[in-house]
Length: 306
Picture 1 (cartoon, helix red, strand yellow):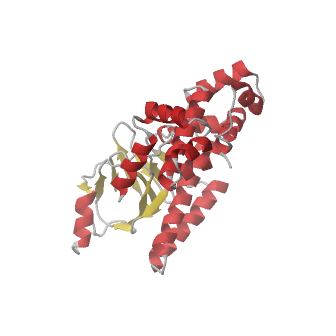
Picture 2 (cartoon, rainbow, N blue to C red):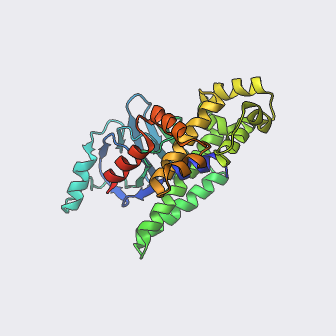
Picture 3 (tube, helix red, strand yellow):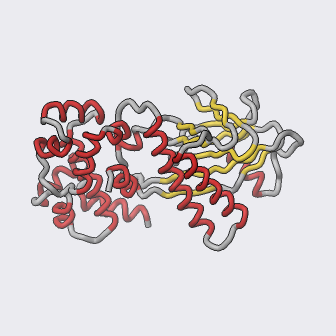
């Protein structure tokens, strides 16, 4: 398995799709800052997305927008339009009041958001930009996105049995395809996404992810990357901002968090699964990284989730 797939598995990606949104008058909706990553796809018409500190983005039919860090943003029929809070818009719909239903050109949007396990985060999230826009021009990934969006639209239209689950899975596919397109097409400077684009560094990352329990040395990782030790370490740190062994340690801690929350194995068994023969050494390292012992972390998170 590749490193990005491992990371997405650990994050427990979950997609949610909203009902289709129709606007036919001068309109604008303001989405507040929150913990989720939002996405929007324009099915019909045109609109603009405004995010503080970014140029206003014009969307054409078929375009996707992803707001990875949940930044506050506005979706507008025209850049000069006023906007109402999204919560106000949703409340009006629930009460049967139809806002923005005039005689102008119709705009049709599909939106949704993505959730991640907050207790098990990875630098991948931090490596994403404030906003990602994918135009509708055709290539292989765009065709897959188009097909996924078409299935999503059909499920929203029919509302057949199981549609909520199907929509969630389709949204997860959409998220991964957007990240794949961004990684392959954009000029990603540094961070995890830049590292997985590099054939040498990504190979060493895949090795660490595939066997975190192995007692990796810098020499072994450099050989896996097809490089000598010094250039390998320099390149790895330049791309990821940390040394290979620091990354490995952080990945082991992240995986141990996942194991702690997913099963009832004792601490020593989990320590061994992530490369530590001594439970005491694992406890000390975990506490230095997380701020509490593995047992305390497990107890606190599982209690809070009930």
